Amino acid sequence: MEKNLKECSNCKTVYPKKLNQCPNCNYKEPMKLDEVLWIFILLLLIVMFFQKISALGSDNTMQRSQNAKEEIVLPREISIRPLSNFSGLSRDEIFAKRKKYVQESVIFNKIKNYSPNKNVYKIEDNLGWISAYEISKNGVKNNPDITKGASRHSISINNPELLISFIIPTLKRDEKTPFSELDYFLPYRIVWDKQKNTIRAHFKITDFFKSKQHKWTHITVYPDETNARDLGYDWVYAYNKKGVFFENKTNNMSIKPYKMKGYYHKGFACGLKEGCNNYSPFQSNMIFNIKKEGGYINFKLYKKQPNIHFSKPDIYYEMYFD
Image (tube, rainbow, N blue to C red; front, side, top):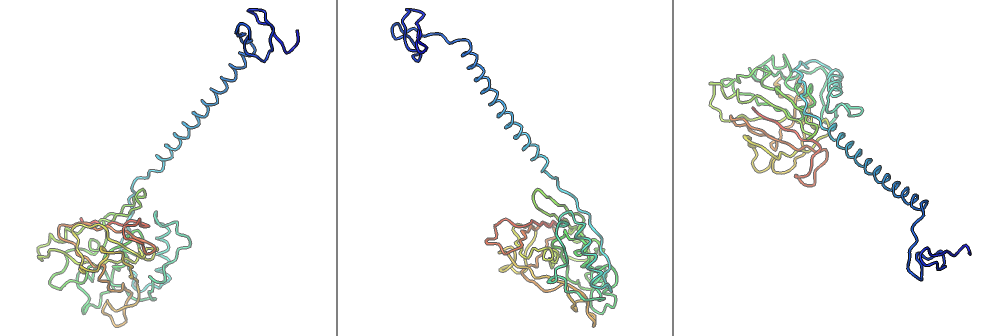
């Protein structure tokens, strides 16, 4: 029999091998063992291939899930440095301190080649700085000791995370604040929430109103935003607040983003003939009042002017007045 022919097992008809069944009786020859084996092996390989792909996908999903868990960072308490005396120090001495504090910051220590911003630090050598104690207890007028003791602006310089602090204007002699210099300027808590890109600063304010020496319903504060500007955040928008209201009701940083201007330089706010290093300028857009019940004000800070004030900021900063 020719090689390309085969015989039907049922009716003995001879027909071409390429046909799947007998043309005479339609009988279909069963598959040979080796053919069945090869098909089985092929199917097994296909199943094993898809099982491997599925396992890899599952491993990748688990790895992504694990990585996501590892990325979750809980809010972190930031150590608060106390006030210090800058009076009589040179620019280089103060700059050395400032660089050290930024390098130690868990938030800003990755800034490469940090140096105090020349548009913010315009200070001069060996001048006095206004004392936190003297300004809050005895005021500026006729006070030869106004620069003695811990400097009130050291709270910002010593704590880079305090992007916006505040200054309370000099009080009348008959209405001296019951605060010590530490209560008056220092927050009692700073928290860094990396997941939300937010710094939260808490200040003890309501104790002020417990004093029986006055009948005030609010206190006025002048924000000191030198830290924000020094670290590159020039624009601010106060997007949320409670228990806080602005002096300038028609033009302030809660109405639209505002470009901040604060800096340190030689001025005469201390009342001394030779002058002192102090904060400037007066910015009515930023001045706000805190009600005796306390409250909060939340900011969006930007490095460049935002297109709209609802856009995502470079960092969030929140102040709570407890």
